[in-house]
Image 1 (cartoon, rainbow, N blue to C red):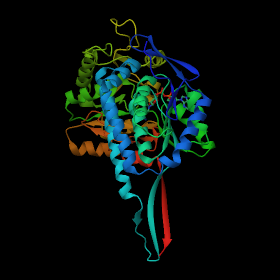
Image 2 (image 1 turned 90 degrees about the horizontal axis):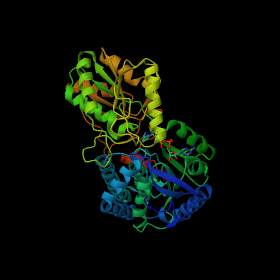
Image 3 (image 1 turned 180 degrees about the vertical axis):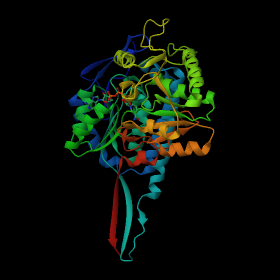
Image 4 (image 1 turned 135 degrees about the vertical axis):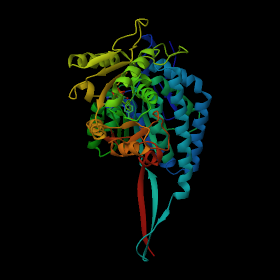
Length: 480
Ligand code: NAD
């Protein structure tokens, strides 16, 4: 059993929480740690600490805040190996995937350190007016105490995408990690605790959604909620936030498509389809779980994709040859298995996978799964599965492919594979998605926005948009 920090960090102090959270290792199903999380009283204390710290922190200059973010970068770099291990242990993802996450955290804090430093030069910039009688200047000010609520699939990454811009903007923060994966965030919090931030600027309360998330969303002292998670909970958060007229940023689900056009390189298409469906065991809001293939390529593509999926080595996350690890917990495992069973009942054709690898009797392991003939109205086609499950379908025309991809309540991301740059751009422009990759894996940069259309998001993370989400705009106009 691990012995992590307590589950509550408020006003620069680690505090014993009131509610015991059992954390398990999804690869073994064995207990990993017990974390004492908080409840409503901890939320009250954390918001109070953040509110008290806000007047001074919000007046610091961007350069000073950037310096703190750079200390966090160094702290994460120093504990990189530990963070990778904890993330793999707690989440079930292979070490190489956890390493990508930790490097993303470093890149994100580094990027927002730069944006914080650049703020001072742009503050009070003059605004051209069509009048000689008045002058106007623009200020961007932090929006106040913010609550950050994150899920379990990329716990540290989603935390960094919110925390780095919130601190850069000058906000004070209460972070609520997922109760399923608090261990990497507790380590990150310990790094931050060693960076010398003024007490109360950063606070963390582990706990369940009902015990901690709901009171945070309702708290009148919280100016803004930045939430990543399921649509069902996102709606609840928005409803609670409405009562106190809080700002909300929501990053929710997806049902994204990868489109393989008739002139695509088949091997590249197979690699991208496999990565888009099976990375992180498919537990990605950005999973391209619908694969749309031009009629001409459909048979050859399916044969190669099946061979690729069957060759994927599902194994313990610490195995040096692992390609896909475990799903995060029993509930998620059963949910995905339920989707597979309902898909078969609805008439979908199982091409491969759909079951536990025989060599792994324990742990939440599932073979990469591919379906064809998936009815367009079935849950398998329409709902987010959040597991290693791909639905492959062929199309006759570009217009049909675009219509199939856009026929979803979601609109997070999409991928296009084609040798024809003009066609790929044309299709990318027609897709309802916040981010489209062409002939590329799902690379993400702090400079490019994250978020989507329709039910996938409200707002955007990363880039300057991620910072603006935590800023108020103030114009000052005076007579000349
Ligand atoms: P979830 O909605 O169950 O939980 C997310 C967070 O909300 C957790 O910290 C949870 O404790 C908290 N929560 C639960 N009930 C709450 C309530 N009533 N009030 C306030 N907070 C509450 O999601 P999950 O199962 O942890 O994560 C998977 C989901 O997250 C998927 O739907 C996935 O698409 C989504 N996701 C989206 C993105 C994105 O960028 N769009 C990224 C990652 C995950």
